[in-house]
Image (cartoon, rainbow, N blue to C red; front, side):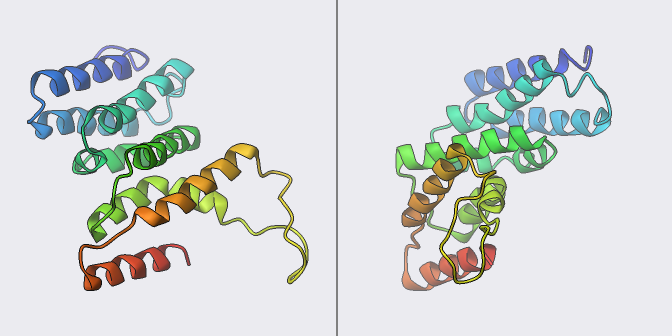
Length: 187
C-alpha cells in the first residue's frame, strides 16, 4: 500500500469496488476490512493515521457497509467490521453508532435475535456508555441536565429509547432471552 495517509482512501475505493462488482461475496469486503484493521494497528502511533483525511477515509470505510448493504445485519456479518470499529477513535465510533441508530430507526429494522442485538449493542456501546453518566445533584432530588450534556447527546439517547421498541423476539423464549440480554447490557 502507498503512504499511511493515502491507504485508507485506497481501501475505501477497494471496498466499494468489491461491493459493486461482487455484491454476493462478503468475503471480499471482509478482506478489505481485515487489511484495514491490521494497518490501523500497525500505524496506531503514526501521526499520519490520525490526520483528518485518514480519519475521514476510515470513517467512510466503516460507513460503506452500513449504508450500502440492504440490511445492517449484513454489515454485522462481516467478521472484521467490529474489530476495525473498536480500533478507531471516539469521534469515529460515535459517528458510526449514530449512523447505525438512524439506519435502524429509518428502516424500522426489527432486532429479532440475540446475535443481532449483540452486534448492534457492540456498535452502540459508545452512545450507551455516554448516556449512562449519572446526573448531578443529590440522590432523590430533581434530575438536572449535566452541563457537559449536549443537545446532540440528548438526541442520541432519544434514538436509543426509540430503538428499544424494535427489539422483538420471534417467540416468547427468544423475546425473554433478548430482553434479559438488553437488561444485562444496561446494568
